[in-house]
Amino acid sequence: MPYLVALLTAGIPFLLLDYAIGHRHRGSAPLSFARLRRGIEGLGWWQVGICAVIAVYYAAVIAWAVRYTFFSLDEAWGEDPEGFFFGEFLQAGDVEITTDVVVGVLVPLLVVWLAVLAIMALGVQRGIGATSVVFIPVLVLAFAALVVQALFLDGAGEGLDALFTPDWSALSSASVWAAAFGQIFFSLSIGFGIMITYASYVGRREDMIGSGLVVGFSNSGFELLAGIGVFAALGFMAQTGGVPVDEVASDGIGLAFIAFPTIISEAPAGALIGVLFFGSLVIAGITSLVSVLEVVISAVRDKLDTGRLTATLVVTVPVAVISLVLFSTTSGIYVLDVVDHFVNQYGILVVALVSMLVVAWVLRSLTDLSGHLNVHGRPRIGAGWRVLVSLVAPVGLALVLGFALKDDLEAAYEGYPDWLLLVFGWGLVVVLPVVGFLVARLPWRAGTHLDGPPPGSDPAAPLHAPAGGPADAGSEGGTR
Image 1 (tube, rainbow, N blue to C red):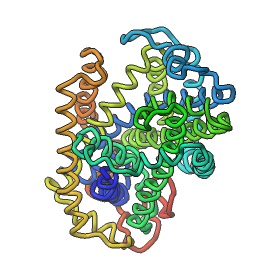
Image 2: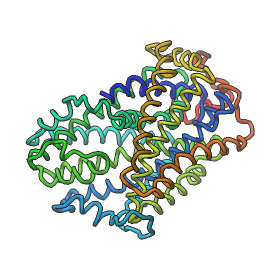
Image 3: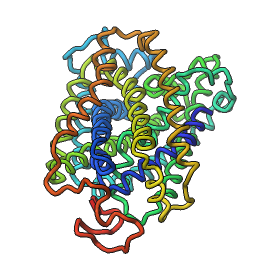
Image 4: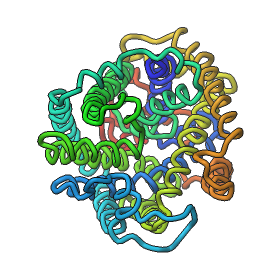
């Protein structure tokens, strides 16, 4: 229920806000914000910084999934998936920063970065677009097969009962609401520059409202499918162990790399389930990682007027090096857990809240943005959307962040030492906006149009190629 509330009151309304900013102003996140008002360019670079940080650690999870796809073939984790994951695989020791390299993580992580580098160098259409055309259908088919297989496991019904039976007491938990809003913003890729960037590539006569609704509800439909498959499998695990579902259920890393291997070991056709599950994680992860990196690459190209290959190398190589240094060591799991928690909760959600308030109340641009979407968009949006973006969503986010902050101040996250939380948690949260607004002070390349939307970006104007480039839908940088 918190997930549905977050989707309808914040997710889809904010998705349309991102679409409107990027589609109208035809640029990366920093350029679009600069064209909206020069003084708020820093919001765009703040979002770029968040994407860079996410890319650094997200690749590590993909690398783990690559290894576990092969581990599934012979159930290499044996009788103790938890001990195998933290011990033999990650070789995690005490909570400290080490330089002890784990070769079993380093090699797949390097492979992931080489593959992503190649995709990004090919560009939006030949690289990212072509990858999505192949990977997304494969992902849907593989995960659908996984769900069907899970539904035939003994105890699947018990797991589905746990999924769909309301627990009303959980509605009072701030962490539940924070997780719901964080999941919506992360899975819809809103609030941290991705949708602004990709909207800028779309033809100016595209129905962005209809597209937004399709994206929002199809994304949630797939997540519902994922929930059914996961809880059916957890029901099997609960019945096998003779315990309630809530005693075997886990989340995040624990679900993927500890609970599911246990299920794979005990289920009929376990190897098939494992290959489908971890293969799906790899595909979903790659498509997400390239979309995150495109935000950074697009911003660098707009700011410095560099070619595609140059910008890709300038962005991807340093990010990959940092990723390899931090997450191919025995301390990588601890750093990843802290960074993920704080960037999701206080990075994405805070910049989303600030950008909504600035656009709605400082610039008062919502009427212009909704008017832009309504030219070719259906159904039309108006006062209701503006109320959600300017009032309902900000209030909801502020409450969620307030309660989550209270929880994190009362008790150290996961009991980690203060130095680890200060460096990779709170410190990162503070540094990102500061660096963002400092980068915004750097000059734009000569000739960059910053005074409002660029010429030829009006969707109501006659469709002809403006001086800045072609007007065909989907061309990279079309009228940018």
